[in-house]
Every structure is written in structure tokens, then in C-alpha cells.
Image (cartoon, rainbow, N blue to C red; front, side, top):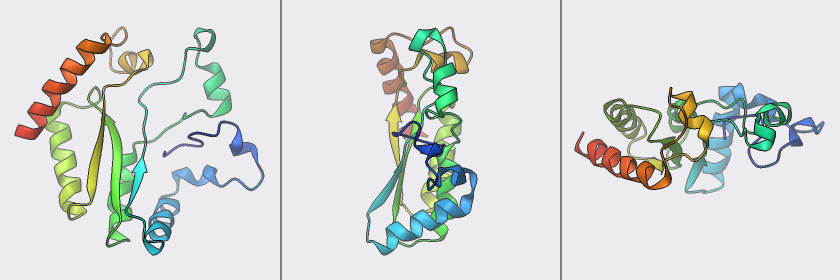
Length: 160
């Protein structure tokens, strides 16, 4: 995940931790090259478009602990990593909430072309209420409504 810490909150305070380099494109290129040398098939880049704000109704604890915040768009790392590798695949998370279907279809088809077919989409409908608020809604649609929306979103993207 293109952030300070993904699954190990607080590890960033360890003196040998290097995740402060998450903003350095060279860090990601080095990782991709290491994985390619190790014969890995792919790299999965997770993402979240909301803050974990459920503890005491606030995101303060998540912010203090660097719990997946701040987080950058993982798709923007892929072209540089693809240029530095030949075989490594790249999968990334993108919520159906975050882009208009035309915009997303254009972006992922561009990534598909730039990587020569080495990109995949981890489709999510989001689960954090803050995800909806980040896009001007009062929160999220209920579960079934989100998945109906996702079905329609995919249908439109595939046609585009």
C-alpha cells in the first residue's frame, strides 16, 4: 500500500523501518525489480479511499498511528515499475465510487497498454462511511445498493 504503514500500525517508529520512503518512486521501482528477480508473478497494491474513523467516532487515532493514512493513489506507481520490469504483473485496488466509469475505463486501458497487459483491477465497492463522505455523499449506500451500483459500473466499464 502506498502509505506509511499498511497492516502493521506503529511499525513506522522502528529505527530500521523504511516506509517513510513510500513517497519516493525509486522505492517502488526497486521493489518491482526485486520481485522480478525473485520470479514473482505480481505485486498487489491495496488502497482505501476513506479514513478509519470508527474508534470513538474520530479518525484521530488512525492519523496519530499512521494507519493507512496518508495514502497515495497506487495506480500512479505502475507505469514506472512496469518500465523497469518485463514480466511482473501489477494489480491495484480501485473503488467503483472514486471515478466516473468513462474516466476509469480510460485510465485502466491506458495502464493495460503501457504495461503490455500486465495490469489487473481489484474491484471494491468500499466499506468505510468516510469513503462516501470523501465524494460528497452523507455516507455509503447500504450493502446491496453498493453492489448493484458496482454491477452497473462494471457493465459500463466493460462496454467502454
